[in-house]
Length: 341
Image 1 (tube, rainbow, N blue to C red):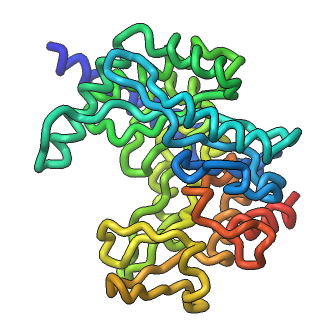
Image 2 (cartoon, rainbow, N blue to C red):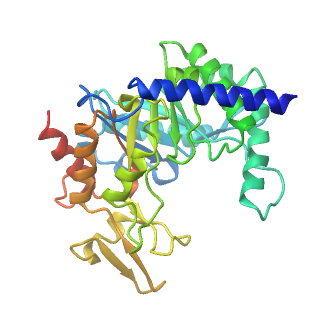
C-alpha cells in the first residue's frame, strides 16, 4: 500500500510540475536577472589561512558554499570539526572584509552501511540512512543551531543521489519542513543533476538556489563539459518546474580524462602546458584532458545571463588562478558580467 501511495504522489507531482513548466515556471527565463550570482564551492581541506585566498577574487564572487566542514548523521545530528570550521571561516572573513558575500554551510549526509558492488543498491542504502535523518524531527533545529553559532547566511545540501520515489518523497518533505523553519532568516540551497531532478512544487518553492552540476561528462571526442553539451543538458530541465532565476549553471574549473577515469586535475596546475584549444596530455598517466578555457567559461556565463538564469556556480575555487592573472577562469566570468551590467 505504501508503495502505491508513493507512486501516486510521484505521478501527481509530475503532473503539477509539467503544468508549471507549460506556464513558464520552468525553462529559460524571460531575460537577464538583476543580480547575477557568481557562486563558488570553497573546500575546507584547501584553506588553512587567509593566504590561501585571493582578495581580488571577492570583487567577482558573490556567494560562497563552505564545503568539507560539516555533515549530518542518520540521527539528525550535525557533526563538524570545530577547529577546522573556525580556521576556514577566520580566513574567509579576513579576506572578504566588508564585502557583502553570501556564505552558506554545505552539509553532506550519511553514507551507506556495508559494501556494495552495485551502484544503485549503494545509493538506495545511502538514501535509507538519509531518510532516517529526515524523519528524525531534530535535523532542522540542529542545522539552525550551527548556522547561528558561526553566523552563516544559509545551508546547502549535496545529496548524491536520491534515486527512488521513496528517497525523493522524504527529501522533498524535509526541504519543505526545513524551509519553513529557516523562514526569512536563512537561505536554502541544493545541488542538482539534470538527469535526476524530481523536486515537488512545494520543495521548489522552499529552495532558494539550485546549483546545477553540469560537468563530469565528455563528448565523442573526450572533451569535458563542452559549451554545446552543457546547453543540451540544460535543455533537459525545461519542464522540471524550477525557475531559471533560481538556477546557477555549474562551471568546471577542473577536468576529467577522456575516458572519465578517476582523475580530477585542476585548471591552475595544467594551464601552462595546455594547447590553445584546452587540451593537456599527462605523461605520468598517459591520459588526455580537455579543459574549459576562459573563452568557454565566458560563453557559458553569457548564456546564463542571456537566458535569465540566476548565476553560475564554480567547482571549485582552489582549481583556478588568481583573478588578477590574465588566464584566470574567474576573471573571464567577471569580464563577461561587466560587459552586460
